[in-house]
Image 1: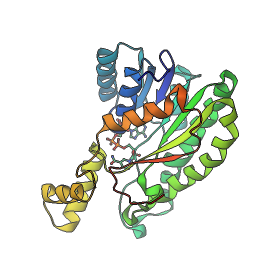
Image 2: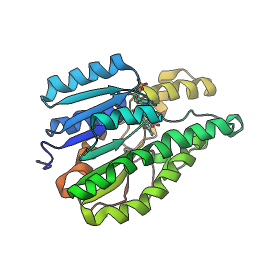
Image 3: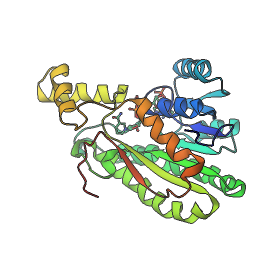
Image 4: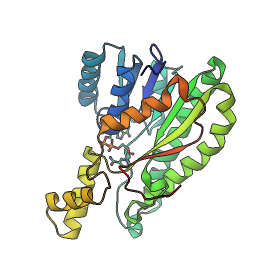
Length: 259
Ligand SMILES: NC(=O)c1ccc[n+]([C@@H]2O[C@H](COP(=O)([O-])OP(=O)(O)OC[C@H]3O[C@@H](n4cnc5c(N)ncnc54)[C@H](OP(=O)(O)O)[C@@H]3O)[C@@H](O)[C@H]2O)c1
């Protein structure tokens, strides 16, 4: 299928590995030039080389913290007028709400709500002028099915979701769409690290615990970053202009909602 985005330019935040990398690779495979970001320069440049070798598109790697003003400024200086923006950052830590002090809440809200909003604010008017824009925010299934140990994520991502629901409907008439992708359990470093912690807390070995987690997913496995990237490409396609302000779960059926 031709998604009609060959030659477009995309910023993909937090993309040296995991879901961000899955989106960057999938967009690059559609002929989109990609500008990728992460804090660790070495892994980021290795990913840039991998995408270049696999796709032949122009890949620009800008190392920096996307949750800091300077990191965002550097990324936007390299690509002030993207056609596509994929918002992503590391997620907040899991834990008990008693452990989360005000500074932790401020950080969660900054990283997973204010950061994507600031990036949207920086690029959305250019997209409106050019009559094309696709913005995809990587959030979490916790938006639809909050998990108690992910309270910081539940809160911050709900804030972003609420904001986007309004803005998406203001910009849709200009062929600019904003949608959210809600990952369930995906086989990434973050997921593995989280499962190690939860397994230890449950007093189980990792493999037993992870197998039980997979068995609880109707697809009987975790998702892959490549599958996640496919959904991102679909939402970024030229033909997706009527998909506005949606929250798309990609979770192998893990969250059981009838609607
Ligand atoms: N995997 C899942 O099952 C799952 C489920 C629900 C929600 N999510 C959410 O999806 C997002 C991506 O998760 P993932 O599983 O792909 O994580 P991951 O495998 O740990 O990858 C995170 C990526 O983001 C980069 N990154 C982290 N913090 C950054 C920052 N401040 N500035 C720039 N880059 C940053 C990392 O590189 P550096 O460390 O070098 O910066 C890395 O490239 C997270 O917000 C996570 O909470 C994931």
